[in-house]
Every structure is written in structure tokens, then in C-alpha cells.
Image (tube, rainbow, N blue to C red; front, side):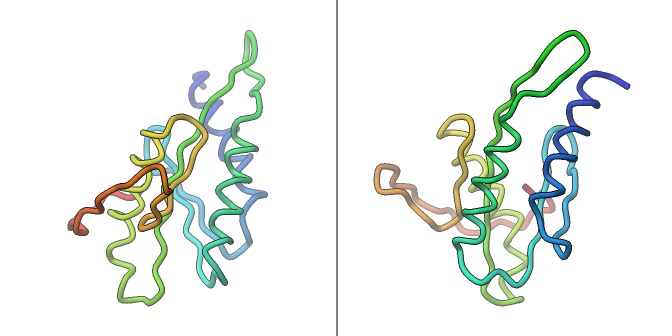
Length: 131
């Protein structure tokens, strides 16, 4: 097993205890993971999870020959109704790239603009990519 594969497995192991039994974690490829949650009560639930993920994933990793630290960027998209669900992958992807533009260890929620960061949101695109 390569060091990169070991690191990704450790990341997955750290994510698992942070989510509910009803949530789904999936590795999309490379170093991207998706977490699917249902029945959230408020947007704060996503904020809280994002903050816990950043804190846990940012802790040092023991790897053969030393220690590694990684950063994490999180894009969140929420749907109030099932009819909005088809746009979630594109919205999460957009939010992810907004978080990456903000630097390491950050999250963004699609449609939420921080006061110092005015952003024009594009129309949802038809895409199969999930972030």
C-alpha cells in the first residue's frame, strides 16, 4: 500500500465517527470525499460538521518515516426540498472551489456569502461531478 493510500484511509477513518449512522461517506476519487446527510434541522448542523471535520482532519498523521499534516476544503450545498437535490453536486462543487480560494482549512456553503467576499453565484449546471 502506498503512503498516499494509507493517508486516505486514515482520513476516512477520522471522518467516520464525525457523522451520524444515517449519513453516507463516499470517496469520489483522488482526495475528494462526499458526505450525504438527510433530515438536517438547520444550516448550523452543516457548519458544525464542517468545523469538526476541519479540526479532526487537520491533526497530524503518523506515516512511515514521519508525520504529515494536510489541509481540507469543504463545499456544502443544502436542499430544502427533494426537487432541489439534482443541483446539489454542482452547488457543492462551486462552494468547494470558493473554500479552496479562501485557503486551507475552510468551508463554504453554497448561497452563503461572507461579508468580505462578495461572490456572484452562477446558474446551476448539469453535471455528474460531486464535491
